[in-house]
Length: 429
Image (cartoon, rainbow, N blue to C red; front, side, top):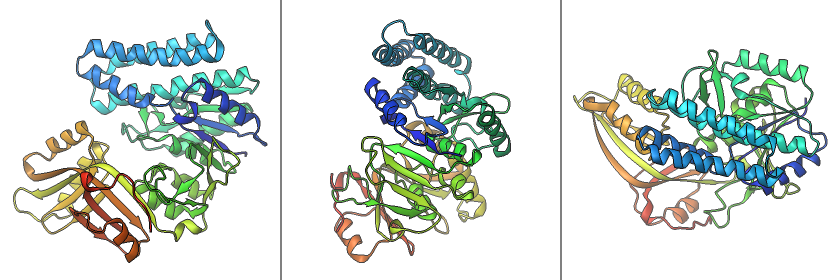
């Protein structure tokens, strides 16, 4: 089975980018079997703001944001196809469905309302991309991921029902030989409730397709040529890693490296499907490859930065030990609100963890912890994680910076630092 391709929002941010995507696909020999596409540009952020406006009873703000979303997508359609293009009617139907979903779910719990709102970004983008590919002569089959990716009902971070998902995808690929194009990030329960797979989850969607279709490989097309040992936008001398193992890629993505979504690699590893990260801006540039065998990326020190961190120092209010029961309770609350412990350190009577500073989720987490725990918060932090560090690297990056807390294992060291004390640009030794 040929490869599965995934394109992120930057690769379809406007009409010119979609044209470029079409040109790139026409040059691929053999062509991919399936295409997974994210929402356009910053659409997911716009939909999250739309949701907040809706739930805040700001009807004027909601309508203005919905109109802006409509203008963005219809503007791209007009730039690609001219006025009165048939795809415009398809976009209007989706926008009407989005508005109806908002009204239907506005009193539902936030995670349910979130999934029935934010997932529309991918439905809109794939409608545009599929229409353009058909326009340039690439026969496509637009597929609704809600009919293919079957999940449980854990909204905002849904789990996959693998047997049913594989059965549906295999049946579709058998009966239709056209290029399959579908949405990243979204799925649905067996009962049809829309779900999402976690923020930035389109990579995971592509891995699901590759796994179920027994693809020869998965290629994720990015605006960078591959995986780096640090973010080249923040670290002056970051270097590209040409090869690294599934295990090392999982470690780096779990700690916050942004090139690959953390859930992407498990379904690929189970079938030894290689993952290639390639630049859609420079498709001939040397890519990065992730597979079963270790490579240079398993040895080279890596630097990972996460901003906007909030440190929670949690202690049982009744002077209990922070035992397995307390840990399970606290981490269960964390999972329910879609939060990830980026830093975690446990002592006899305290648990310290760092989470992304997402105001709504953090507020709801603290409400859940309630009177059973005393919580002290420290905000405005940056989490620095080093993989395979040596003494010279630790000194060069941390040096005399004020450290809020730190921990280290044989292969990983982490520091929580005040963001206002960190340099704007970092440099590896």
